[in-house]
Amino acid sequence: MDRRDFLKISGAAGIGLLATSGKPEKTQPAETAEKMEIRINPINGDRVSLLGFGCMRWPMIKHTVGKDEIDQEAVNEMVDYAIEHGVNYFDTSPAYLQGLSEKAAGEALSRHPRSSYYIATKLSNFRTFTKEASIKMYQESFKEMKTDYFDYYLLHAIGRGGEKAFRERYVDNGMMEFLAGEKSAGRIRNLGFSFHGAPDEFDSFMRMHDSGEYVWDFCQIEMNYIDWKHADGKRNTNAEYLYSELDKRGIPIVIMEPLLGGRLADVPMDISRQLKMREPDRSAASWAFRFCGSFPRVLCILSGMTSMDPLIENVKTFSRFQPLNEEELAFMEQMAVQMKEYPLVNCTNCKYCMPCPWGIDIPGIFKHYNDSITSGTYAQSPEQKNYNKLRKAYLTSYDKAIPTLRQANHCIGCGECLSHCPQSIDIPKQLHRIDRYVEKLKRGI
Image 1 (tube, rainbow, N blue to C red):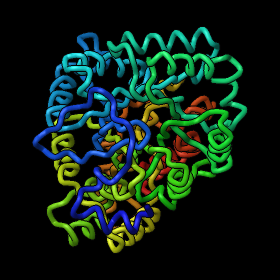
Image 2: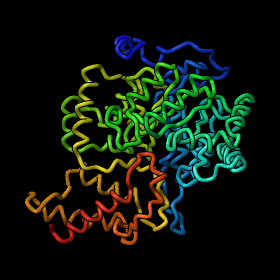
Image 3: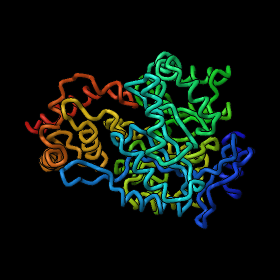
Image 4: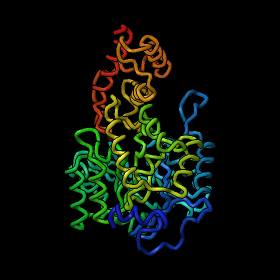
């Protein structure tokens, strides 16, 4: 079924019920009265909530010694609300929140029946990929998540470095053979990968699938109305291409970064005005989510919610879900083109670049800069109305948001962060650009 036919049918029937045959498993997550949108996995019949909980942005609090730690009480409350309202897919990784995410997820989820949710986690062996270290990471995930099987297990962020890097991380060390054995034993129900990379790198993984060398049960891609046709960087791929290649092979798709790290929830004022003119009661985030959910091969859309407010709003968006029609999809393409005109840094606040060996708060600097642009408080030139007021406000808020020793002027350009960024941002270049901007503001030019 193509997307046009899908849109014609889905309005009355509910898109989650369109898909697909498949033998259901013995136990399925319970139905709820909230009518959360459900998508059916065509491979195994899993009934997956279209809204998935991304566990990369758990709420944090300061420990008594000043160190950041996860607010477990808040996590428990959010997980309870999510499950109660039909959310049943939870995605995490040993790499998230500097190794703290899985444990917090395990603590919260284990308080509920195991059959009421799906766990997705990853083999995040970025730095050390010996077989011993990789197996240890895999086994630790079971302990942290308090489970004896994973519903969806991913090879984390493959693509960069192409097939060579993939084989070093997973094939030459025997891990693909090991994971195949774990799948046969039932400890992994679905094996897939998350992708960041160029089209030719993605094509190599599709060739593996086509040849039967490695058959992917699902794939996780970055998709939103900007990346659909306007993905940033020479080494990122338009989601339109990724989706089409997966769709024609019948591979279920999980979506990450539907809001681009929150940038599509807090859009520039002019974009927000245009969205509100069409739908006064809908948020900018709901438009972004509905865009992703308008494509039938999408199994689940992840959202990294940090508090109850966005969770409640997102549950509302995904309950009695309304896909975008053809005219609305064209409108979102217009918004994407306009968004690209703003001088934003394409940072999703994933924090993979952290910790910086020189102590620089890379995501904090980018967020502060982007927020000033989207809020309309971006000082551009002395000829600008209220320039001095805007200039002073930026400098004052910058010092409050980012401690002096962690600001952009301390970047020495070592490049340690470059290989870790899934967006292929030239981080030193962007930090130096922001530092030059700050210096010009200080001098009033």
